[in-house]
Length: 251
Image (cartoon, rainbow, N blue to C red; front, side):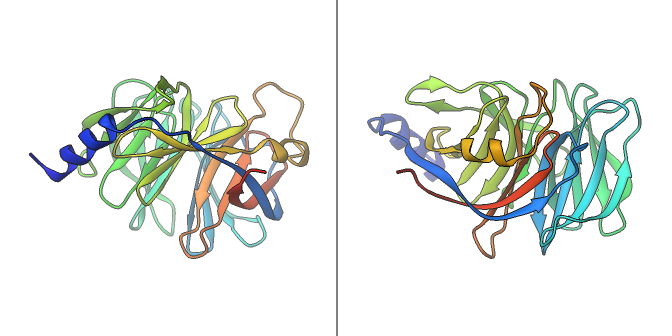
């Protein structure tokens, strides 16, 4: 029996423990293009790579993580709806919503290369250094091969034994995957070996600071992690602000 399977069996047999309650502590508030319908966010070496959605408005962007300013942008074809994004070495992989295409962009010039295809919808994406993890709005995360984007396994995500649906933008951080939940103001910290949520981050405090437009879809979405400092970057769809934050224990 493999070590991974033994660890999974241990987690499944262990009694359920309450998820840690966390909240956001705002360290910096940065300007953000209110026209950007944020679908994915990724930090690397002082830059933020951002995917935006909507047909005819989707793009891939490069922002300065220090001041939020736009450095580079490439539009997508009007027939594509941009979704989650992640970086693998000197490539970016960007999902599309219903088109079944994962676009591959070469850095630093943002030149499009041949990509991958997949079945179903694409929502969020992150890379843990070995595997790609993808969400599709369901209560499961998909582990995919880096070489050909092939599906390896589906990981059901549960909180206190209950499936968690509408998993959206993702960030891979160590043994965890952080996930936005569509139209919710909290973020789930998911233990990727078991699928159990062991932390819930309340980001409600960002909503009145967001400068978002008055629309039901102007919700929290987009999460990136800076491994050098441990800080996170959060924003939303049609928000005028982007935040550098820490996750701290709730009061």
